[in-house]
Amino acid sequence: MASKVLYTVVAVVGIAAASGAAWWYQNKPSTGGAGPSSAGGSPGAAAPQTGASAAGPARPAAVEVARVEVMRLIDDTQAVGSLRSRQGVVLRPEVSGRITQLNFRDGERVSKGQLLVQFDDQLPAAQLKQSLAEQSIAAANHKRNQDLLAQKFVSQRSVEESAANLEVAQAKVALAQATLERLKVKAPFDGIAGIRLVNQGDYLKDGADIVNIEDIDAVFVDFRLPERFQSKVRKGQRAQVDLDALPGRKFTAVVQAVDPLVDTNGRSVGVRACIDNRQLQLRPGMFARVTPVFGERENAIVVPEEAVVPQGQKAYVIKVVDGAEKDSKVSQRVEVRVGIRRPGKVEIVEGLREGDTVVIAGQQRIQKDGSALRVLDINRPRGDGAPGAGLPPGAGASAAAAPASVPAMAGSAPALPAQLATAAKAPQGPNPCQVDVGGSAARGEGGSGRAGSGRKGEVRGVPARS
Image 1: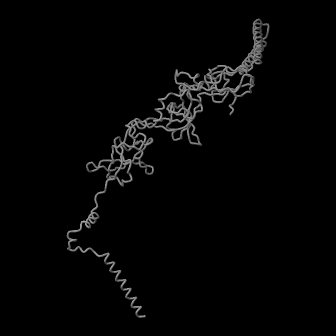
Image 2 (image 1 turned 90 degrees about the horizontal axis):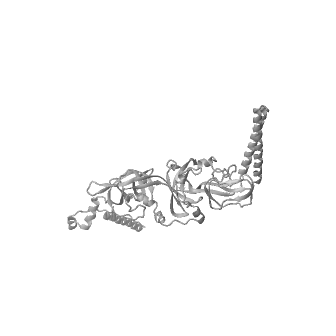
Image 3 (image 1 turned 135 degrees about the vertical axis):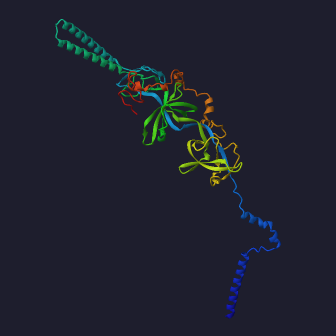
C-alpha cells in the first residue's frame, strides 16, 4: 500500500517537472549574447524583425478612369400608342328605305358632299310636288286678297288668313324637301371609302351600317405618358414614331393636344400627335412606338454610368486630382446632381466640368478622400460595348439613340397596296396636320349632315352601335 502511494507521488512530481521545463523552453527570453550569431546577426532572422518594426507607405489604389465629355443629349421618353384617322365616320341612314343607287366603289376616294347612297324617294318626291302645288295656290290667293284689300272689297282678316295659309304651305314644302333629302347619304368630308356592307336593293332600317369613310391624309397617334411627364409635354413638340408594320421607317409627329385629365387608374395623361400621311403609308389601327422629345441640350456634361456611386438619396463621383507630390494622383469625392440617363451615359447637371477625370472602376479600393491612386491607362479606348464609347464629344447620345434606323432608311420604301397606291396623293400644299378640320365638322357646317359630325362611329341623330 505504501509503495502505491510512493509511485503516485513520483508520477505527479515528474509530470509537473516536465510541464515546467516545456513552458520555460517555449517562453525563454533572447539572450543577446556575444556569440557570432548575436554579434553579426543572421540575415534571415533580422529581416522579418526589420519589416515588422518599420511599416512602409501604403500602396496606391489601382483604378480605371474616364474623362468628362460634352455632347448633345435629347430629353425624351418611350411610349406606345395606336394610329387613328384624322376624321372617321360610319355612314348610317336616318330613315328606313330601300337602296336604289350606290355611287361609290370600295376603297376609292370620295369628295365632300358627294352622293354615295340613294334610297327610294318616289313617295317623298310626290309629296313634295303636292306641297309645291298647294304653296302656289296659297300664294295666288294671298296676292289676290292683297289687291282686293287695296280696293276695299275684302277685310283685313281675309288677308291675314291667306298669309297664314301661305306660311303653312311653305312649311309643308320645307318638310317634304327635308324628308326627300334624308333619303340621300352624302360624304361629310374628303376621304377614302371602306368596304361597304350593303348592296343595291337592300332594305335598311334607320341606323344600319352602310360604309365607313376615313380621312387619312393626316393620322393621329394617341399614346399615354406617366403623370410625371405632364409638366414636360407641350403642344407643338415633336415625337418620333416607329411602327412594327413598317420596320426601319421613322415618322415625325407633332403634338396637337394634351388631355387635361390624368387617368386615375393608371396615373397617366393622354397625348395626341399628328403625322403627315399624304403618301398613305399609314393606316388607322396600327401599333406605334412613340418617342416624344421634350427638349435638346447641346452642351451636356456626361460621364459613364459606372462613375456614379449612389448613397441614399444622393449621388457621388470620385474625381482624380493632382496630389502634393509631382505626377501623383489622389482621390476627391464629389457630390453631383444627375440629369438625363442614356444607355452607358449619365448627364451631370451640377458638380463636374468638362475635362475632369473620374473613377469608373476600383471605387471600393479607395478608403477616404486624398487616397493615392494609380491610374490604369487613361487613354485606353473602352471596349465595354456601351453606347457612345469611343465616339467623339457631341456624337454619343444622338448616335446611340437610333443606330438601327440609318441603314434601313437607305433602303427602298415598301410598296403600297394597289388600292391605296391609286388613291395616294402627291404631297402638295400645307401640311394637313396644320389645317383645322374639327371646328366646322363638329358644328355640322359641312356636307349634308347625313353622315354625322365627323366623330368616329357617330351619325347625326343616330348613336353609334358597337
